[in-house]
Length: 421
Picture 1: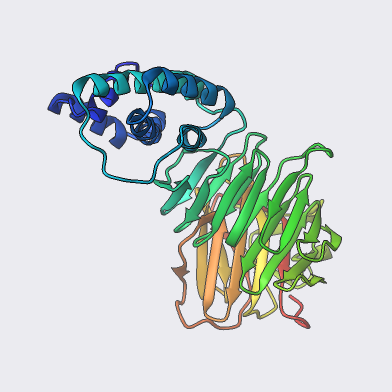
Picture 2: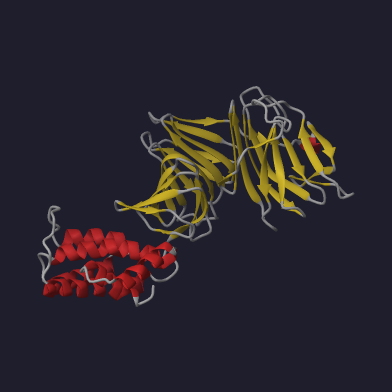
């Protein structure tokens, strides 16, 4: 944050800001980034201090500022604490200040802002997580102050996040949580998140046994030492689907707990009942039984399927089982071309999976009746028409264009009881 912004904010607060200064502040806020975020936060902070100056002398306020700055790790927590510590009065219209009082208020505010900027000007406050990817919009509620969500936004403990499409939050240890459209979550610690409602997909980095990552919902608590899983919280309760690793799941009301292993699913109902759901199984059996190598050459090596055309043509792997209701999770690595396709209903509909050079892409597909959706690394992908007909039973297909190669690993599928892909 540039020091030249400090007197502009002080002038704005006591009503002396000229047009040129207003333009500088407006352009800084529109430009986004750390400076814009801090301006928004600290205008709210300064409003609290200015209100306190109506009934307190400058020395009292400055002492309170110093105490709270040492005690609090976020601007918004500091705002609330200052209001409490100085005996906040009931809201009322403030009388216009006289010039001496206005200047004193501005001076106190400048002291507070300068101290806070020195504390928070680093790219990431200690223990902070941040939004690293968005597909649409979202909002962050910070102590009642609504802030539009944006890429790179630093989140602090207490923030409520609402996703209006999907967004991904990265934690300091490299863990990533993708919050789906309509999801609401709260940051409760540097290694903890509470899902109020909706769906999240988590990829949690290895944790120390004495300091696990924790995800809670109104009904359940998930303790994680490093794994990949999905949590869905809705009116019927909480469901956890585990793809890799091991997690501990406990019901909040009953305090009963179970251990989930890769491929397990479990649900905690609204009344606290906890039960496992044996739903997930490998997508590819040994020797690719039940799959047609329609184009190119495909092979199963060490649990991963690899496909390409040695002659430089296209490659397509097509299932033999007709499916209409399914959930699929896998990781894809694409080389030589810009994308690959995941096809549903024998090319009735498909999703284009973008290439991330040298990296695996986490893909999750759901098809339930007329509902069909897919995400890649937590980002919602548009559904594209092949035949474009009404949803119909049909096989899954994986396709890569000429001169490309596709690897598929950690592929698991869930279908209704009695249906085998």
